[in-house]
Length: 216
Ligand code: AP5
Ligand code: ZN
Image: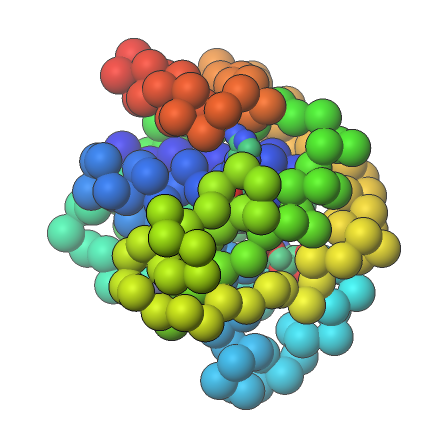
């Protein structure tokens, strides 16, 4: 099964993708994570992407589609893919069709996480991740069980994304409204869009997504 998780910054795409990986053995393909890894490693892609990401703008369609294609080459065992943060523009949506066809895959579901944008700023500005294993947390909504210690790996170091400040978040939302939301009709025409209330508690969102996946 191959699915797209769609929603503005902070909608919970990464949170739900991680849970799908845990519960269903699927693989998360997050272009945001791939780009952050490239920035950290100072690869040519990372050097190009850094300023764009820090400004909350979109990296070029060619770069992100090439990243996705390369990941799928390495997934020839048929493991289900969760596209998280991709596609984000009409050219990316068309590129994904071509890429999936080349890898003999079909798109089963597009799940749109519906959220209230003002609440998202609070969500994003309060989030942080484990510096060692990348597990995501939130100052209010998801704290480690033992304060200051990662549940997954025991590390006591955490980090905050440089693009998680209010100004950049507003820019990222603008980009979402202008370039990403307009791709939904492409998938609506195919009858594969499901809407899930992304404002519900995390485990309820997971249950709603599981229901969509169980529907075939
Ligand atoms: P990317 O990394 O994709 O960021 P984003 O889309 O802005 O999404 P986020 O990661 O901010 O949010 P999320 O929906 O995953 O929410 P999360 O689960 O973390 O992209 C970053 C940048 O990279 C872009 O701006 C762009 O420059 C570039 N880029 C990436 N892909 C690109 C592409 N395809 N094309 C061009 N450029 C690209 O949740 C947020 C917080 O809320 C967490 O703390 C979580 O614990 C909490 N939370 C989650 N769900 C709930 C809930 N139900 N209730 C309460 N709290 C919750
Ligand atoms: Zn950790």
